[in-house]
Length: 472
Ligand SMILES: Cc1cc2nc3c(=O)[nH]c(=O)nc-3n(C[C@H](O)[C@H](O)[C@H](O)COP(=O)(O)OP(=O)(O)OC[C@H]3O[C@@H](n4cnc5c(N)ncnc54)[C@H](O)[C@@H]3O)c2cc1C
Image (cartoon, rainbow, N blue to C red; front, side, top):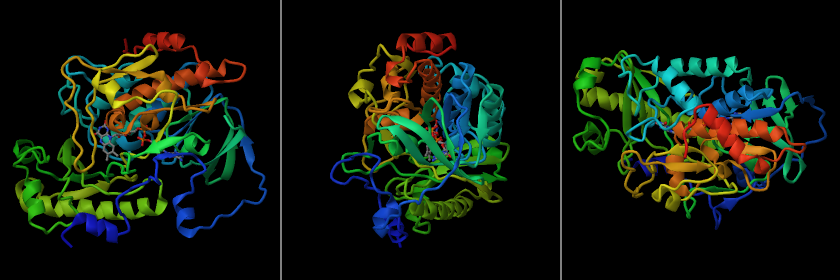
């Protein structure tokens, strides 16, 4: 089998095209399982316990969810953070991404406030990096987990691990009454005044009825990757050897693919990003998978195929770079699949590629972003990157889902178009939107009937600036 896409198709992982005519959907959309079986079941009346002591509940403990929860707690709210895994950090820890996207606009740091504080602490886990380096700084995932643990617990946030949002109960079309969460205690209903969706996939907002978009006009989404790391790499030869990334024309990835021995490596869109994450340890963001990250069967198969892809990288690099990787082994593969793209929840404003090209500023901006349009899709041509000192504003309205009063989004599920999603999806801007969402949620709780669309944005901006955030 010489074509990776053919292989993935036969493995049940055909390219994701989630559109059905249009790519705008709402919560009533059938799940992947219901679509395949055509069957559904209405639950019989079931009494479950209620925990209603919270001002703000954040679902998802990735970069967006952690800063949302920390900022809500620091702003005075009784805050609960619900996370499906047993650690905080999302893709940066459970997902094993080996590096932070740039924190600077090539002149100065622009993701500030909590983002900068977390970034600064995370650098202590990679002492081999230059102290003043701001861009593409490596991540030691175990250290980063402890950084998030410290920030979150010190702020007073209560954390609930191994707990997954399973359903949303509405008190009206525009207002959430409770979240139904599944964990070892069974099902529990959690109530708050305001809820923040930081699930990456927009589970909470979508299940509450928000409209969302997926992929491009044909519904095709960015590829996914299961990250992994090798130990016992020869650091000297690694540091002095060829750049393995495909943007180096002499990267061994091309010979590896041409050899035909490693069919799971993507010949049309090779990916071999790698970083020294510690002594003799290299983290990889390598290989592509095409799947729908909201389809549990596809994700399950993706984990299995992802581990096979990691094994093929090990074999290939042992063969083509024996001095560096000859004695290496896979020390860990990620415990979550790296889904770059899924739902983009429609907000009061959708950030567009024209806004990005114009480096637009907004009266309600709550942060700045300067990252390139980074789209993992065959044939996609990105516009030129920003020059030194250039950035655009991130409007608050991208965090407020249309038609829902007590819900905010943070992280990658905020309201963008397909192209600018490629820029705003990465961790530094996710940390920034999280901090703003957490603070805005608390301001909304002060209203007699919380409405995130009616938050005093100038007060929000003032408070964010006091906490050190950067915007115009
Ligand atoms: C393969 C890959 C490589 C990347 N490379 C980089 C890079 O080099 N640098 C960079 O800065 N960014 C990179 N990114 C982008 C970035 O990591 C993510 O887009 C970013 O982490 C999104 O942050 P988030 O907080 O929105 O979501 P996530 O980091 O995805 O976190 C979401 C959290 O919510 C939890 N969750 C999800 N659903 C539920 C639920 N129903 N109930 C309870 N909990 C739930 C998850 O377990 C997870 O912890 C990469 C992304 C991918 C996929």
